[in-house]
Image (cartoon, rainbow, N blue to C red; front, side, top):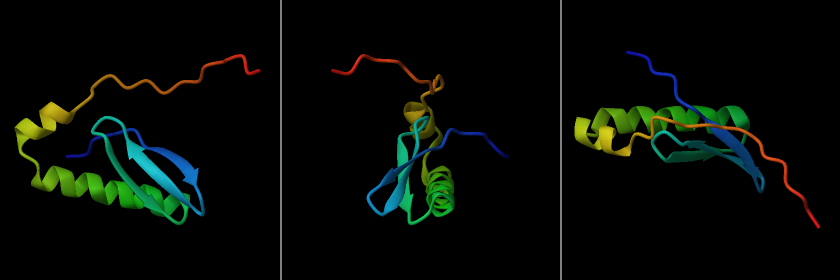
Length: 73
């Protein structure tokens, strides 16, 4: 079974950090693609080892990624 999840990737120092907010699972890599692939691997390992109860407990079903405008200074 395939499932679509959110991947937020941001630059950190010389590499990239990737986060799946639905399950609060993160990984990293030297490139965007590596960070994304490492996150996919971390999520797949989570689904292989976690109990159905843990999966349900950690799941954040409503995730909204948006931007906000703020005044600075």
